[in-house]
Length: 92
Image (cartoon, rainbow, N blue to C red):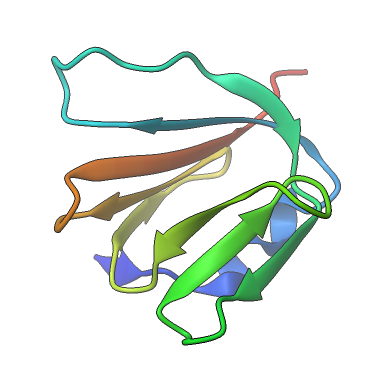
C-alpha cells in the first residue's frame, strides 16, 4: 500500500466530491458530505496533507497514512488514530 501523495489528489481539485471521516467498519459512521476540493497543501511541519474546501476549512491527513484508491475514490487510513479519510467523485 502507498502512503499519502499530494499528486494523487490533484484530480479532485475544483470537482464536486463527497467526503467522510470515519472509524472502523461496524462503528457508527458520519454521513458523506458534498464538498469541492479547493486546494492541497502540506502543513507547516510537513507531517500532514491539508485538503482545503475553501480558504478556511480543511481536514489534515497524516502523510504516513496508508492509501487505497480507484478511479472514483481515494481513502487514507491513519492507524494511530484509527480513522479513515475518504473522498469520492460525485456520481454523474
